[in-house]
Structures are given as C-alpha cells and as structure tokens.
Image 1 (cartoon, rainbow, N blue to C red):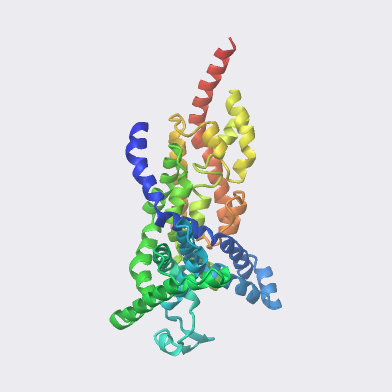
Image 2 (image 1 turned 60 degrees about the vertical axis):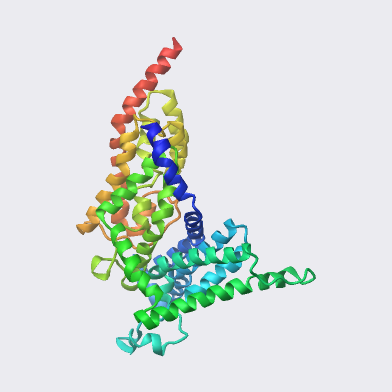
Length: 441
C-alpha cells in the first residue's frame, strides 16, 4: 500500500498541487486572511449575540461603525483575492507583482454591473433590473464579497498569466536608464495593463450584448452556485474531511493541500452566511444559509490538529504506561489546545503507523458529518460565517462561530475523540511498554 500510494497516487496529486495556478490560488487567498479575521471581529460586534449589549450599541449609534469596518474588510474579500492571486502568479514568474495585481483589480471592476436594488426603508427607489442602467459608475459591493469569489479567482489567474507573458516577452515600453526606476516601472506596466484592461472590456461588452448579463453574474450562476451546492452537502463534507488525514498519513500536509483547493468555495459559503448573519442576526436555510462553510471544516475536522488528535494526547498524558507516549503527550498537550499537532503526527508517530490509522481517518468525518446532520435537523444553529484565527482554542472558537450550543457540541466532540482513539492507543501503548520492559532486561 505504501509503495502504491507513493508511486501511483501521490506523484500526480503533488504535480497538480504544485502547478502555478494552484500555487497562485493558494498563496493569493492567504493575503485575504488578516482582513477576514479583522472583519469577523466587527461582524460579531455588529450582530452581538447578547441582546442587551446589542441594543445598547444600537442606542449609542455604534453598530453602524462596526458595519462600516466589516464592509471595508470581510465584505470585500473578493478584492483581496483577485489582487493576491494575480500578484502571486507574477511573483512566481519573477515579474514585478504589484502592477499585475492592480491590473487584475481593474479587470474585476470592468466586468461587473450593479445589480442590487436601492431601498429607502421598505420603498424601492431603484429596482435590481434598473440598477445596471440608472446606477452607471456605481460599484456594487455585493460582487466584491462572496458572490464574486470565483470570478475573482478566474480573473486573477488569467490576468497574472497574461501580464507575466507580456513582461517576459519584453512587450513593454523601455525608457532610457537615466529615467528614475519608479517612473520606468510604471511605463513597463503600461502596454500589458492596457491590453488586459481592453480584453476585459471586450468580455464585458460581449456578455452584455449577447447574453444580457455580465461575466460576474454568469460565473456566479453557472459555476459558483453549483460548486457551493456540491460542497454544501453531507457527501461533500465527508470527502473533504477524510482526505486531510489520508494525505497526512503519508506525510503530505493534507490540511494545506485540501484547504488550498476547497478553501475558496468554503470561504464563499462563509461569506454568504456572514452577510445573512449581519442582516438578520441569525442564519437559517430559509434565507439561503450554508451548513458546510470554512468554520465547519476548521472547527469540526482539524480542530486540535489534523485527525483531531486531542483525544490521543489526553490518553498519552493520563493513561499511557510507556515512557515514549507519556513524554510525547506532555510535550504536545499545550500545542494541541492551540491546534498544533505536528509533534503528535511525527513524534508518536501517526504518519505511516497502521495501528493508529483507523481513528485518525474516522474522527474528522465523524465529527464534521454528525455536526452537519445536527444542523440539518435544527438541533444546532447554522454557523454565522465568522472566521477565527486557526490557533484559537476549541470551545472558544465554537462559541465565536455559532454560540453556546456549537461550543457545547464542540466540547462533546472532543470528549468523543478520546473514546475513538482509546482502544487503538491502548494497544499501541501496550506494545511500546512491552518493548521498553524488554529493553531494560
């Protein structure tokens, strides 16, 4: 099995993951994370879960300030994505990356029209159908958030590729060496930026004249919505969560690999939940809420680390007899609370260890799958779309992403992880203890 995986399965997967588009996508999306975290804080403040505090902030006029900060960070995450992806593509090509990112941003704005109705209370001032014509020059924030995510990815990748091609082929304006570098650099970007901007303008004209829509809306309807639907399913969450420990078992960073591919879709789901939460103070299916979002993936499949190994760590600290597991357990307990478990993966080890493979594979889909079913049944609330730093300890993270019920369920899941790992860890511990005793003789 080891030879088959290493020679047949992993090479094509790693080749795909290390292609320039996937690397640019993965690294470009990382740029948006600080702003997502900042925006999440203001989202919580704008829709504070304690009514008395929320009412007080409303009375003081603070809520609109929290909303302003949210709209300028979390609310425009597609802007960070399109700039970041084109930036990273150019950077990997050893090309000045900033003009590439800015060119992608211009293209992203060119291809969209305003589509949101303008309201005055309950009265419609400008309908959604009238918006493209009456609001010319107006940038609709709807498409700068989650609904524009896949369009941002596509435009970022295409722009990064074309821009880098122009620069590497030296199809640029070259000024004399006496010209200051800052001025010369701006002229280097002129031809590729002009060509690419014109390209996106032609695309905009084509979709408006032929399809009576925009590229952004077309991508959202035909690509992003189906992808979000596939990911937002019981089967989808099971596949995603079992792939992470599967790759980790063979020593490949499964969290980064799987997260880099499915992350943009889960982020789009989370952004839509966040928008619903901001508007209504809660998320449900009736308003288009998603069950499978980034928070579910992070906090119910990789919390305390890939494989949810906190149950194994607790066994090692309090119940192991072998010195090997006891010593590793003491070293890994605190990092595990902060979702760092590489010492467990490589120290126990779990990597390439068939005696611990079963609980390592089972625990993430068991946790995330059961959470999905409980949310679907209405026992647990939908997650609010807030994204917390990945080192946030469990239970605290559960409360932030969904309230006290999610925090309580997360605590129960962590207790369950102990019993899932216990029989396998005990057998492994007995084997190690026996080996240690024989070594002493």
